[in-house]
Length: 245
Image (cartoon, rainbow, N blue to C red):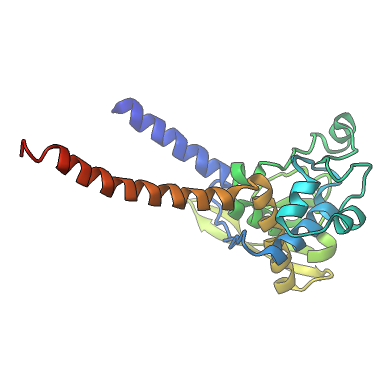
């Protein structure tokens, strides 16, 4: 029992860390049945993410099938490298170059939604703010001292962190970030940027498990089958044991 409790506590701690620690996460409202949102998310992904982050476990052809997009549309508008329609979503940037430029090789995003969570991703993408101490001049509320530049700044604009004082348990006071505000508007207003990030997170969540909807539907059918078999087995058991009972 003691070992079980320790294991559960460790799992809970890991999940809290993966979700971004103690920050308050915004809800992403993921809806994998919204094909239009997924298509818009795919557009944002290939335009703003795929130049540095690969998604090698998803093929363009699988994405086209699942998102109801034809081959010509994908090849002309969503493939910007030498990749082919049947290839995975890889990048041309070499790992050693990215290590030199950014200090770390940008991770593949195939499973990022499963490891971090959709709400964390949504909060992260909305959480960049100006910080002159950072190499690229930006920091992030969900990922302190992040090494990634704010590649979506042309959409969101430039933001600043708004701080409030918070009293600690020992009686001392520290400044913490309450929220961020736009100080230089981008191409999208706040509502439009929220929608764009919802679409992008929606797509990245699909990317992490393209068969998720199929799995859920299959799970419902399996449960229904087991319930029906339970009824059959119940009456079968009564028939077998009727002479004894």
